[in-house]
Image 1 (tube, rainbow, N blue to C red):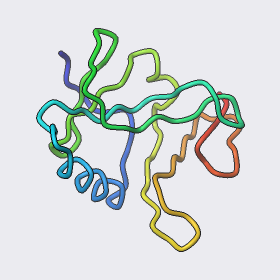
Image 2 (image 1 turned 30 degrees about the vertical axis):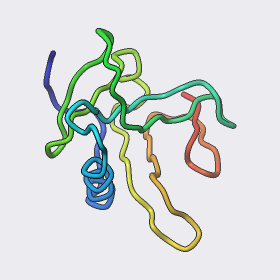
Image 3 (image 1 turned 90 degrees about the horizontal axis):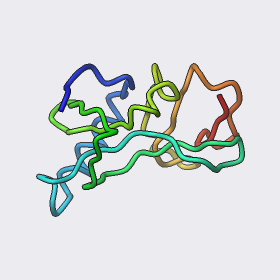
Length: 114
């Protein structure tokens, strides 16, 4: 298990919401925040941000303000330098992703192409 600096940045609002979610988990001692990408979405790939209990040997381990984080090593190039924010407005509520490496994004900010 390697621990290094997570390649993704979180705004204070995103960290507050992640702590709220993490503290509400029933099995938080076995849960990790998984950051990554998956195929699909209107631009080709979409972001993955979820609490997960399955860890593989392909994962790199991090910690963000006491929250254990895992990221598949193959996904690092897609999320390096990305900023995750939490929006809690009338029209938008949820995590948003600002990825400087994305060549194209969709209007909702949830999918991208690289």
